[in-house]
Length: 180
Image 1 (cartoon, helix red, strand yellow):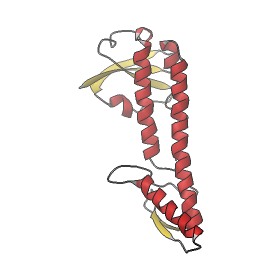
Image 2 (cartoon, rainbow, N blue to C red):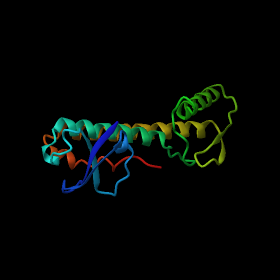
Image 3 (tube, rainbow, N blue to C red):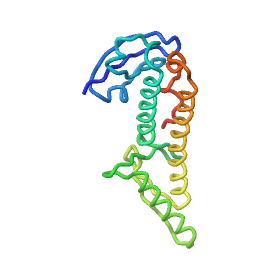
Image 4 (tube, rainbow, N blue to C red):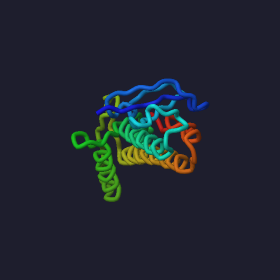
């Protein structure tokens, strides 16, 4: 399945190039700072940016935001001890594993029992955490996840408030995300 896309300068709304490719290309597109990309229908591909239906642009931007939010959440999380894996898949349930270790740390603290957990960090280094350190890791990961959701909600509000294509295309959906 092919998708059509138009790239543009965010500040001016000026179109830079058009293209088509395999479905999903806009979600993974790496653009220079200050540029945006919007996936459009085949029918809208021949239109100028300002003539594309607002609902189509809204939907395209929201799909990109959701893909970026997922990539940020799953791309590793900063902690006071260095970045940890935060990818949550069936094969690698990193956030579930972290929360399980945090729960064990909390239970150990409540029982005045010793706790030590050896953890492999995102860079494959190995660290051993006590209960308080493991809890700090869990809190940092959840703060990272929450910050990604906060950024997505802010962008969604901006998209919903925009009344025309020009305003929508000035929303910089690539910046402001939490990072490592």
